[in-house]
Amino acid sequence: MARKQKTNFFKQHYDKLLVVASLLLLVGSLGALVAGTSAANAERDAFQRDMKRMKTDFRAEKLSGFTFDAATGLLENPYQMATGGTFLVAAERVSCVSCRRPIRIDADECPYCQAAQPTGEVSDDWDSDGDGIPDSVETAWGLNPRDPTDAEGDMDKDGFTNLEEYQAGTDPEDPKVHPPKFDFLRVSDIEVKKFPYVLKSHTEMGKNVRFQFNRGNQSFMLRKGDQLHKTGYALSDFEVKEEEVMVKGLGMRKRKLATVTLVKDKDKLVVKEGEPPINGMFVVSFVCLKDAERTVYTAERGGSFEFDGEEFLLDGISQKDGTADITRKSTGTSWTVPKE
Image (cartoon, rainbow, N blue to C red; front, side, top):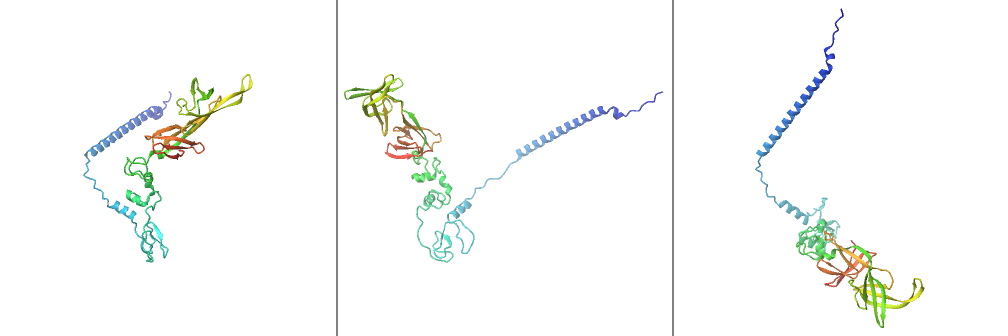
């Protein structure tokens, strides 16, 4: 009779036990997660209930200006440095005429040697902080004569700095009064264009000479003094002389050719018969530094442009420097506009 073999229960059911253990671990994890979520929700609800019940009886108290007034007072009148002391105090100082130690600029007597100091008032144009605005003006405007940054401030928020208002002599607290905007014009571009008209021919009838200008398919007949189309240029002078030119199929031949001078205000163009368009038109573009929109104003040399309700004439340009000379038509004042 065969002997019955004993088997180990755990070895026989190992895989099943492993599955059961995994399932139990998973169920336990899910239970812990649910419990944690419930606790977090309960804590959140309790916090929200507490926030709704919270009330405060605190009322803001009116702040005293004493500290601020005392601080600004010290800026205007710093403590006098004691005799023999080493504590540094911000103040304008000069050398004593006797002991040469630093003393306050307004001291009548030296605190070290008691020597009398020269009497005399500080000039009205004294500028302690070197910001371009004298102390007397800064004090009258409520600014700090020892703060160089307030010159770049804008008290009336009109887009012009306090320094610009001072230089122009305008009220820095009135936004309706400010420096003229044309002082802030700048040249943004100078463009050279071809003069689109060519002198095609001329006709002599005694002393009466007529000149034909062409632009594309258009023709314009001018006499001396006439204006060329809508350019603003007028025929001011001319010269007709005989020259040798190359004629196709015939070689060199003598022909009478005209040279015409066109003038517009201070601008002058010289156009010769039979030659291609010349580089004679300069167009200048201007912008205003105080214009956030950066509107561009253009004008041809010798022409004009409208800006801020006034008319300005473009007298000349400097391509090398990128500047332009303009004249304010209402006053006849001329100046050079710098490059941006």
